[in-house]
Image (cartoon, rainbow, N blue to C red):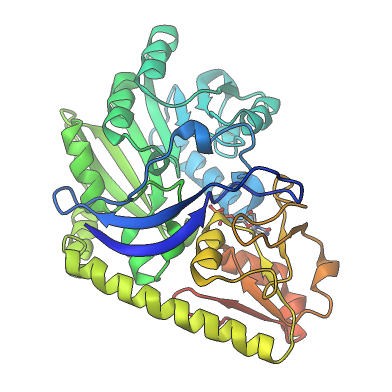
Length: 391
Ligand code: TYD
């Protein structure tokens, strides 16, 4: 059942050049709640090839928070699981796998431009899409793995049954699968509707994911709430038949989600109403600043802000430009409303009083980095958890 309409949207990570001649592809961003399996997903389905190709601009190493999170997890895995062989699905630029011995690990990364960065770190990368055919060929060539990890990737693949069937194929009988993705509960608590865009086919709740896993003979034995990406869940999963203690965290997460009503359509309908209000309030903030004839810039040209800007119709007359550290995004235009993206340089903050924080999920890291801007009276503002000035 569709509960939210975020309007016409461009493809989130398809940054445009001033010279792009082809018409930008747009689609209607409708969000659906499936009462039968508790999954929340976008209505439209796009081929992986149309999104994850040689021009993919996202690099997970661009934030210190992510680099630290991957490193800490790797250390923890070595201590507690001590795997002999590691497979990562969606290894991006290698920020997780670089913490492991290259001889015993393999990364899957279909975006060839990003896979190249991982390869330059001497990581073994297979630059193909994760599917059953690939899993079978990996099994034949390399055998099974006792640790499979995937961060912010499974939700990007439409056919979940194939994803998990493929994982089962290469997961050792006693192996552990760890996946992490933004938490639907946190998304609702923070009114973070910008987790929805063409790449995120799903935003998982424990309730939804555990239903899909059950169907695929897998089970969750531990859940961790982590800070990254505005609040994510890290699930520890094993094969259904493996005897293992199911930790308290699993039931706790289930209870939290039931208490919030993530199994009821009415919860999503209420969420949608809050989003409409959020849009009105955010537009008001932009208007108030522009009425004073002040300049506004954006910080972090995120895929998430593409959803917000296009939903709220904030264009380059309102935000002069975005700053971003990712080379692949610089000197391009944000998809849809075509706000320019400039390479991050502190000089661009001179004479700026107002910054829309596109990368709100890195608020802590950015506040530390921009102490001087804040001290001199500069103001960041965001729509999370409601439209407001941060400092
Ligand atoms: P992120 O929130 O991970 O992603 P998404 O695109 O999935 O919504 O992206 C953060 C973006 O912000 C990324 O393009 C890098 C940029 N960034 C900066 O420019 N400066 C910073 O200090 C940080 C932390 C991020």
